Length: 307
Image (cartoon, rainbow, N blue to C red; front, side):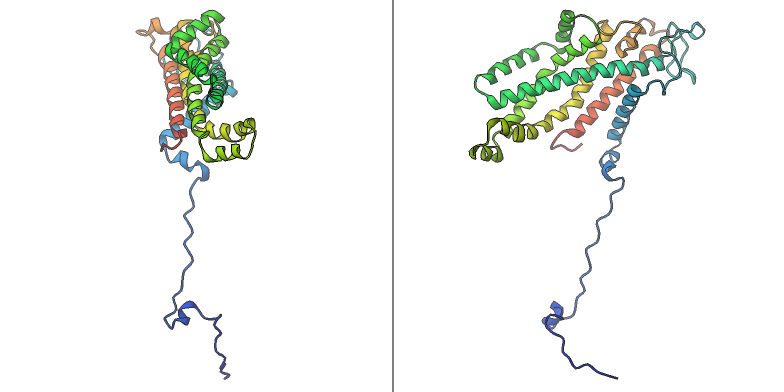
């Protein structure tokens, strides 16, 4: 048997061998536990937020493919099923003309959601632009813009929308424009506050000190860093716009009959609440679910706040 007399080199020794102490084996750090569901984990971990997302996705599905999710004609009356209560064939019951309320609610999603999207888009783009200019340009522009915003905020939103609709005329599009105009002030105030905060940041002052053009600073630094709070306001305003459009439809300012707009569906059953409450109850419940879902998603998107 051959015995090697070579001594281990200093490089071959463990740090504990150099000190003469016992050798300590260092185990590799444990791998962090894998998160189930990946990027969906923050949503699935919160049942309320999950339900809100499901409601929004269902509303979008109703808008894209309403005919696949229903089996009746929303405009075709049927004298054989007048004022029939909820059943397997008619989940939401029927109205005074025998039309299926579930089908009319599904098709009404297209009208109401399209008007809501138009209203929120008008409010977002105009309000963001006004707040951005007021907060960045300042000078005489800031007080002028903010006085306009104060005037819009001083008038109740529903009253302002009714005045605009009376000036533009009745119809879903005009209602959407009116609701959008009444919501401009909310986006303008939030955007201005964010711009004022971002313009005082060190990176903005550093960009200005090296001679970066003001327009480049505005587009590259101020605008992207000011949009987080404004974007989180969109779902909240979406819910408010649904309520406003439904209220105007209920009052007769929106889509004319027989179009199945949500507010109009609720109005059609207001004189039959004692006999057939489902005519107004189910469309009203759909409006409530859509608004609550929008508000829950808005809370989840709020910056620096745990959902």
